[in-house]
Image 1 (cartoon, protein in one colour):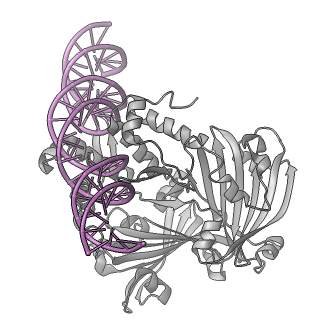
Image 2: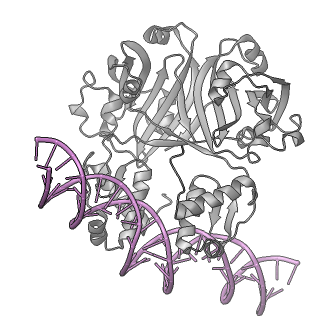
Image 3: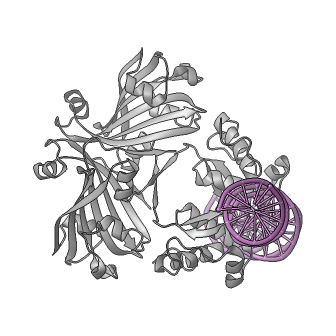
Length: 234
Length: 234
DNA sequence: TCGGGAAATATGTCTGCACATAATCAGGCT
DNA sequence: AGCCTGATTATGTGCAGACATATTTCCCGA
């Protein structure tokens, strides 16, 4: 009961090529026939072959270079796409009711680690928010966020009690670049109290920095409650 | 010192559209002009607009449907792509010398959790490998892997002492689907001994199941040494 | 022998056109 | 009102041809 009975068009060509890649007919590191030859073989226009091969290149199977031709990447490093969630959606998708609690709000100079992540040369004062996200009143994640309010027009209309910074910023504040760092940390006493978990539990952490044209916007660190898992398919 | 001075062609149109999205000229949830109109506005062929908008749709900005037109997605859920590393490359990219040590090899019936992840209905015996990956002789990650040897032709020629299962399987064994689960766990005594870290340290774990047409191939769980971080850009 | 520059070549992209496909809309029937 | 059906319309895809661009290759001169 597969959804694709028999893809036609460029997808059919992509699938045929994929089959050769998987079977080893086109071996890793080797050059594959050029677009014109494949177009002749499959009886279609070169543009159609181009579309198919471009898709495989995006998926990480092929390396294409002008003049040099298309070769199979030696070690097919596959890519998984991780969707960056709005926490409220993540919680609600799990069937729970979302809420959040503002733990603290202040203006301060961020620690060196945060300044480094944001590429801030000087010690400016940023808005610092600490929020706890809850799923059915059970702690879900702890959010530690620094915002450069100068980079966020309309910040005055933001009420952190009413809507979480996570949600307010997403969709409202444009950004061009971001970095995501995943790690693990041990629950310190205070964190354990907030998350309602034993001290020393292992927490999945997610740090995100976002920029608009090299201009730092915000840095956020999410500490998820123990047992939380991030899942993707590829 | 940006690499792109002024992208021309379909990328210019994509950038122009992106600017409208970011500025809010095309508001979330709204319908944007159709391809023909945009082509007229930008003075190019419809196919060129199509290419640009398709790119934005892939990036998660737009939702395009036949007849219904193209609308801005309400909550721009952005995607980060995580490249799945071959551990040796990961280590060598860090400037360290890679090596690995086979801790155990056996045939056994996997625990229920593994069977569930692989969707194995019955209790078959699989090949079980436990490997320690080292960077400059310092423990880097602990790998616990189960392989369905029936699904891997040529497994007889595999010498787990010479080359790690991680590397041998990648590039040699085709697969169509995979699942990736990220989590965190506390270092148990034995794990701490292997990784040379204190008991109770927080470890970033990565579980991967791979399939070929719904046929389970392998399940692997990597436990990274404390402090390890996974980084991506988006 | 060692550059340096010209020619060759594979992919990248654009255009204009055509038809396919899906979703919506409007009209007509019960 | 409710439902079915056919027209409409925006996107999806295909084709042929053309030119752009990046690299490699090769040949020639110093």
